[in-house]
Each structure stands twice: as C-alpha cells, then as structure tokens.
Image (cartoon, rainbow, N blue to C red; front, side, top):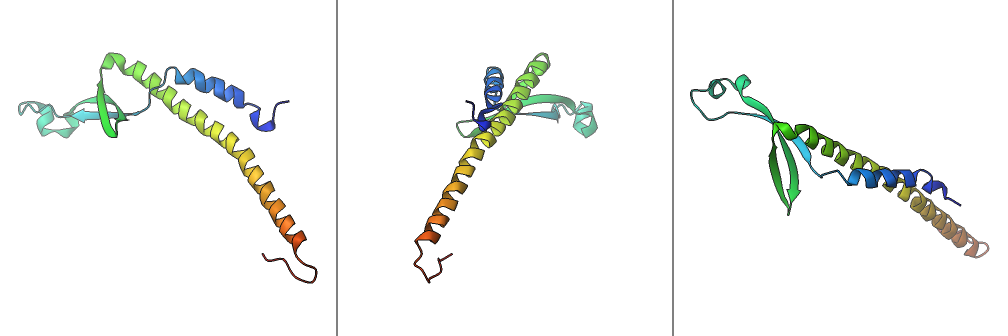
Length: 129
C-alpha cells in the first residue's frame, strides 16, 4: 500500500529527474554597459548604454562567476534557468512531503512521553509539567 505522504511524491520525483537532466544552477542578470569610447553616445548618456546583455551567474569553489551569454544562446540559457527554478520548486515540495511524516512522528512520541510521565506519577502527587 502507498503511504499518504507518497501519493504524488513519485510524480514529483519523476519530474525532478526530468528537469535535472537539463538544468544548470545559477541566476540570470541583464546589464547595460558603457563601451569606454569617449566618442560614443553611451559615454555621456546612461540611457544610451549598450545592451542589455545577458549574464549567467553561479558560484564555483566559493567564488561568484559571471558568464556573458551571446544573443544566439539567450533562449537556450533561459530554458535551462527555468529548469533550475522548477528543480528548486520540486525539491521544496518533496522536502515538505518528507517533513510532514517526521513531524507527525515527533508529535506522537511527545504525546507518548507525556502520557507515560503522567501515569508514572505517584498517587497524591501531581505530575511535573
């Protein structure tokens, strides 16, 4: 028999496996930049900066890495980023389902302890809270 906490969990794990095959951890940022050429309009007017350019950001060995994404790769990178966000969402849902039976078990054990403590109190004496 399937435990109540497992209902739907298998489907989440299946989807998690599917998105894991295409996801890449990280975030995306868009930046407009000045080119540095004093004759260029971007040098004097911030509204005329070049871009926005897309960057993929991630941590590697404790350091933040930012990688320029060429325009031709924008759609593909956005797709793997969406897979990463879905991966996080699914992992959170699975974690919540795993947590629920654990918390219920802790609650049952707490009640048992309380009951045992109350029943072991000597007659005429109150059990300590």
